[in-house]
Length: 455
Image (spheres, rainbow, N blue to C red):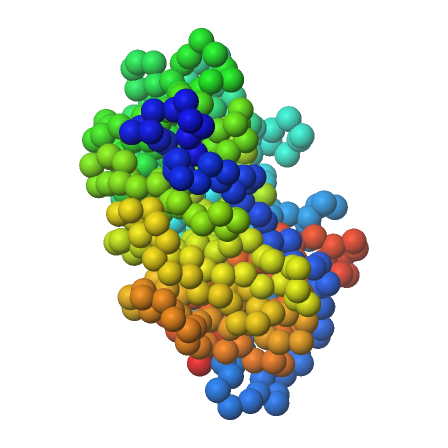
């Protein structure tokens, strides 16, 4: 992604051998909106063919929502529960049969959630401080996902007059929850709510975080030119907030997404050049490689609708996977033929070069979900006449092998999810609606919100 005049020894992202990188932000799969709304008492397992998975349960929306609908946050898993948050409540369901085990009502809208909970099932979410249009996302609420009990609750401490809490991003690493927003950050202990650290001294301040196995921060440094920003990537100690290392990309390149925390794979965007790049960093924060996609390969990840340059959510992208030495990502759908199709590309994290590519079967689209037993786990999306499936590829590439073939009997419902997230956990696959909206109350309560398959 250098333009001849850049120092080739210090590129930020992309590569000088690929002068025209794929540009634009990650695409969001909007589905086709043809919600099905069939009766819940239909037996979705009737006529199941040999080798097809069975429908464990189908959940329909039971919440009366505002006119423009609501986004669904989660899901999070703990013990034998799957938990999701929507509108003004959080609910836990048994993974075996979908029965609601608990629900926690909230006084106002859920406005921020982290990607992961703590190892012992504690979660901290952001809740608005009122129900008017002017309400800020300023209240933190801890929840025990095992029981549904509300723990501590507190208002985020403002760091001075210019700390606007309209849009925050939360991330959990260890027993720490970080609260990022434009130019500001705080961190609290998940177990008891104690404030651990706030803005560091100095010119560069973290504004967004990715959690999980490590705590990664994106920091912005004060400069004299708004159009030529200076960002940094840091790994922070989750207890003290001190930086273990700092990686500084070249001026103009902003940290916008963390596709993987360990190994660390980061997306950088340059607004002025209308370019982006994906870089891998080492455990000690040195540049490991930059992805060098072949000419014409447009890479895509689903990072949700809230993608923004100063967005506060670094984590939560789906459609990517990584192991110690390889990063897996899909290309944008090619719709030039009779039906959409794409391919998955494996990049060597040590060189940034493609190792192999695996085309999706004819007229199908593949999307990486993560790693499963050393193999890459992928979702083969349904199409109008065929159900979806979970498939795996060995890390050496090859032909996809079916792990869980979703039944044709549920294909219409699976295909009808307007905007979905797919997960695989302990032998079950979950199709999870990310947004619920409808034109009237009756239709709203017929929206499928979670469809779960098992062997």
